[in-house]
Image 1 (tube, helix red, strand yellow):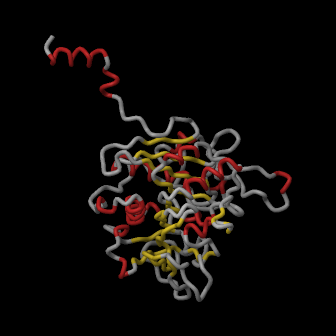
Image 2 (spheres, one colour):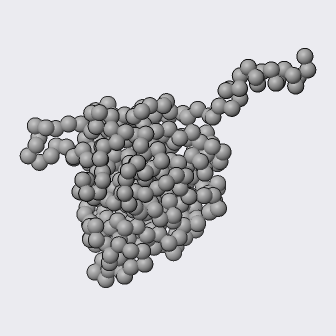
Image 3 (cartoon, rainbow, N blue to C red):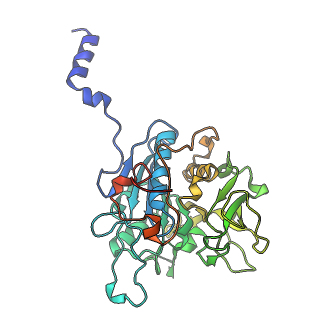
Length: 355
């Protein structure tokens, strides 16, 4: 038999094998989402994105980012969610223990954290979580691995209480790893917006390639005491100027000085490894409608993975599906925030949601 005839015969016998899409590095489950990477610089790299906050709609923004990273950049992505007892993504779950309701304490739950063991990079938006010991240890194991870490918005107060993590007998908290914990709203909460100004001396940093016109409707966080600055080892990339009102191009708030909103650092693990870390306190779902901020986060992933030589301002950060995130806040009924299965977020916009 001729080689071409044999090839045709084999194709006829095994067409599914010939045409099958590449398998994602994480197992499929109704409790999380997987995005197999296409062609691109990130091919063969696995990013785990964790969404479990109550205010900034990261359950919509992180699937959107995963779509961009997989389709336009080639990364395999797994999105893990905070879910309730029915396995539904539930941003309405309170911070535990609630004051006066200590008897009703429950743990939060993020299924699929075992996939962080083989992740090449972890990006997370969590807020004041109380996780079961096993899940908290899985997160700490990653944080102490020496692999890159990116925290957005509430990540710097992502867990309630101390982490089960000590180095040289000293307790480690998430703010120490990321370079500063939330100390209050510097901009007026849900009234001011933020203009991101690139620090001129840092304009050539790889994370800022192609980044321009940074703006978001969330306010500036304070992460250090007045009269001080970012902790030693942190390098600011972007300053956040509070604006009056929530429109891009709005008037500068004259009573509010700019504070750092994006910075990077190294985290030295218990074994002496150095992990690249980037924190952006900009990062609500509405903030990420800004293409400049999306590009900054995508660039940060390349940088975290020591792939800065492959950052390109020409590679797309456009949405891969409809993206209409709900407004930030805790007025869940009026905002349309209800528990939903993870599959509803694959297109980044749950069916029936409103602007």
